[in-house]
Image (tube, rainbow, N blue to C red; front, side, top):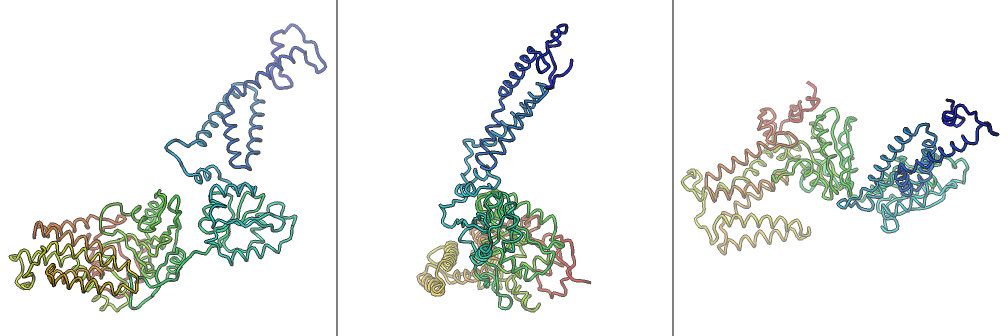
Length: 614
């Protein structure tokens, strides 16, 4: 059985082997020609029966969405249909068509993934459908109208011009655009004459020869272009090129570095972090000129796309710590972080109702530089004038930069005074209330503790009202204009306090001990720790009121055990007290000279333990 010139077997000779066919002008019989025509017709009619249309319709939809890919999809479909028509065996063609049919069905399902419970926004749908930049400027502008709100949002601008015989468009946000840089680029391009050499690969020619920008990169991704423009960069588009040049020509609104309001020092640097991430990184880089210093940038938030920076020294910081922080930040899946670092902390470090801070906030770049040298990791969030230091212990929160600006003796003295103020803010009022209520347990040398007159209001309510009153004064001072803060404070503290004592509502001892406790709270270096100590003081007051000395002992023990089991990024919160480390704990109690600090703290588990040579 010999194959014909078309590659198919001559079945007619099998049916009538004894009858020789009469040759026609082509060397074939008329009957075989008709049979072959019938077989080819049936074979052609069987191809649509395998439901190959869904893939074709899916591709047509994708072609309409992408604009410039429609013709390519039609050519691919024609090539696939020709391959199927020239298949030698029907079974192979059937299997191939069915597999393509299944693939087309999957494409349809992914394209029509709009279930009743899933309703993404129009911009999200467009960005999912459109992955490539179209090579037609009108289609490009239509996509900008759908995604970024061109012609609807006033700050979204497109400057359409002709340079070198090519139609060029600049996409930027007017609120972020740096006029001087963009004007210099436009001025340079206006000198170009129509050149035939730019008919092919014009984007590469503009990139290499004509666009005077320092930071520039090429991209073919439409979502990446939108993200870069929203970040403040400018997109340089050339008609006929499915790509853009992303130019860093942005200028963020920013204030100059000023002295931090919560971490003031008498001597030392007076510059602090601002709300601009680039400025904050520059302040740290100015103090650490280490080539191993790393700043990794991440984006958090589906809508806000907030820039989050992780800073560490590569040959010092613990790799596991850096990876843990990076993985937790990458795992955040929220709409955004409009409140910056505090919301980032809640999503990565703390999600409980614990009043104690598990991270250390600082507004000073010199503190961040010192902690990075010890092996710590910092996290800086754009639009926040503070940085996060990880991991953090309770004793990290009680240290202040002013202690290191004085000599070791005076630094140690100031540290002990601060410890005394913190102890007074925690235990002074509960102990006075306990000794006043239980005279039999009061030591003889504390004979002066107590009140002869109780007042018209019970003592416990006097203390609670005083606590709430101090909080009201603090909130009023925050919301009062700066020129009126002093007058408001004197009016509230002197007149209200004096009148309350003279009318008999309060006693003098309550005002005195409340003022001492408030001063100790404000002397706490960490603002968050001071607020936590206030809550603990209120809890101890209520425990003493209900259960007397047993309540004080049990409440204090509970707080101690709670702190002992607390951890910050797997670091014990009470280290170096629990677990006890004598050398590190002595460094907490005494401000030692720099020459004696030769090793880094073991809690960071750094790659290099030694800071100074032996």
